[in-house]
Length: 419
Image (tube, rainbow, N blue to C red):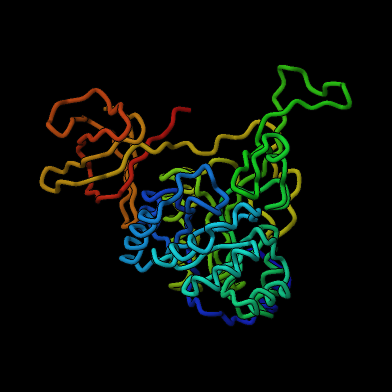
């Protein structure tokens, strides 16, 4: 556990409502929702077709929401919907009907920042919990107290909140605290960047952020170019957040919901990251005194990482070393290859739905939430009629391979990328 002066002295150990931290995962579409829940998420957050900050995600229709809620219920999980834009006048029409439809679909909570959306949800859809979005940039206990008095059972803290600040908040206010523990960080103050608006007329606070901080730039001092044309271009994106090594601190300080960022991320990313954190949380809660961080969890995170990782603002204010000003180290050495659709125990053959090209002679790794973890070389590939294939070439193609160990439906197969 990393030392934070006075941290545990501030927090008395009292928890509000949640006896075990909730693992909250992103889901950009219905398939990702199902895999996030199957791989261990206690709740997922999604976007509808209005009022959310990820306009480029697939997003959910009301029918898809209902199907997602029914699937989640089978695992005892919940579904939240992000309604966290700051609304303009033209956004007001239809808001009441939209929120009522969310309630009817069985959504457990909305995540909101705009007082208009917060008040309207409380008034017209009282069965929906209203969680205050990180877009409110909450960093102090008096603001948390304000939102508690306004009727919210949970606030999502600003990404810039430190562990000491969280401990002080928890000591003063008995309300659920949600904090991001993994994923992309904003190189500006979260939710306050307007580069996208300026460069592309895409409003960051209405779901249109084009991630301008990760573009490649030429640098000039007045009119003098600072680098030659052949030099690497300048970027200014942040490293990604990863708190897997510090789960004990996050639990002991009193965070109630551990939030993973990434509604735009791949199915493989969501399943891999959720599964790693699920194992760490469960292991610590089972016996804090004997808890040990396992290297295999860290290795799995690296298999899905898009960028270098750090601990954000939790222990200290990030410096220049926590940003990416030039070429990135490509962190993820693995690629998502396929999903297990079915397994024949007698023949020891799996039906795989292809997600990226693979072929005989290639080493792959199977993994799943119920303990499946092994590597093998693919000996032979056939189609479902038994015709031998030289490769699985086509997206969503169904093929059959023999596996060295038993696998289950919804287990995943990944391949190592060539160095």
